[in-house]
Length: 522
Ligand code: SIN
Image (cartoon, rainbow, N blue to C red; front, side, top):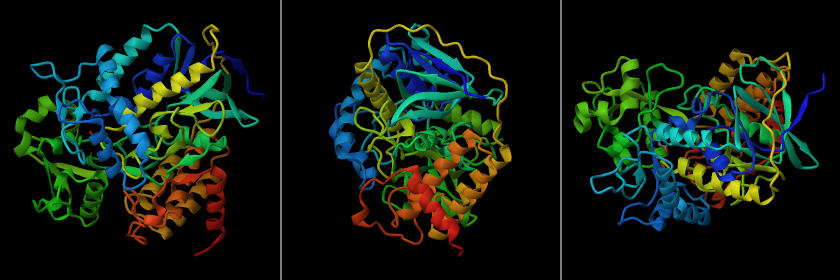
């Protein structure tokens, strides 16, 4: 049966996280339709963000110092001009979020309370009640979207593909998020992809359950260029208590003095880096991974630094510990390195334009050049704000003042449920072979196994979006024969200065790489 087509006359935003909401507000009064797989505010990575937003708000700080830390953390592949421009805009976005009602922590004089996180030269992260920033910022934006008549939100619907005609994206295929209907093609004035990263492609992740690289995958399947796919950030302190996704123990705990110890009570980070627990995230993640691999059970010890205050100051961490039967006031918290943030994504320009006409991207789905090989903590939400706004302004330039009636989705009986067993296998393949430490043998195994899983998917678009991104990550990791930032190759342990540049790959190129590997028996 032919796919039904609905001409919306609206800008279509895929995703419902911070970048998506902010862009929708900045597009007003132009009509927008947002595609949200869950009820608004549920299931978006932004709402789970415990860290806050990095911004030079202190008198002793400056955007230049923030940019310098960003460039340093990114291990040689950050675009310094992008870092300068994003950090220069940070303050204005904090003020805008404040005006929209975000209850950032303030001191008695009304100044922003700033926390320190790893690899920042000074305290620079604005937060809300310790670990509640993502949730509270999202609540403020959702309330504003509800007051904005130009924004229509389609809840319970997810994007499964893009339609491109002569190199221009003209529509988005959407289906019921629970797999209970066949797709409908939504045509729109422009498409903005803001649907998150790829953490859920890994068996151990801090990302919400539905975030499995689908948005990057669908852009790649439409022909968009993907940048830095190999750079996946692993968070060192996911709480290791058997929950999927793994709850996060925010880096701010270490910023507040919590230490990392192992089963023997030894503080192992002091021997690894002069900044110990506040070393760059990739370094801490590898040290945690090494302790886990050696069976020494790494743990985050907040007892001396926070004592009983953890319950009030970090309610999300305390609640997760309680679910896991851990009392952080009297016990150290078991931790593991978990896939947390994809620095790579859809390559975009300063305006958020992808390589395909008609298609923009922002937030974790995009690669702007800000993060390089290792994102500086709390720069993720900042980037989503800066590029959400930039993309909105750029899209708006090409729009007239047409009004559009609300979109009514026809119900199309049918539907396809991705096989949970295939997804579980894919996640295991990624964690085992494309994880914290990689080598050519494991990456080739991953590419072969991804191809085999894909062949069992019977054309399920949702799963093919996941395998497209998994293929891009594994192929880009195989091609980068060096160790840099979060990308660590056991067979190429050194940085190669000649490779200090972003990678760019199309899905066709990644598939050609996969084909070579699958045809070679080793
Ligand atoms: C954290 O709070 O540790 C995470 C912050 C981030 O990923 O930027």
